[in-house]
Amino acid sequence: MDPRARPGIAAAGAHSIEVFPNRPPRPLKMLMVALIVLVIALLAVAVAADRGAKARKHARLRRQAAERLAAAAATAEAREQERRTRQQASAALTSVMPAIYERGPRRV
Image (tube, rainbow, N blue to C red):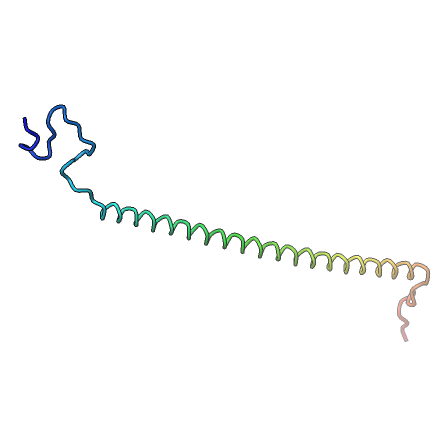
């Protein structure tokens, strides 16, 4: 059988590199598929970068809030310690010096 007799079908024993030797390649379709895959990949990278930036921003804000909280707690602890010291000093002074009104108020 002559290979030219039936186009698209190779003769027995003849080998062709192409799967469909008479079909023209479709570069436009392959280019569109590659373009769509590229756009999807770029969108995925953009979303990942955005989430990473937001995560870093939230971590920075949490760290700053923790630092402010630690500073406020240290200040409050210092004030409480100072209050306790004053209270102890006042109690010590009262135990040495009797209260002015040891007796009840006078009645006339």
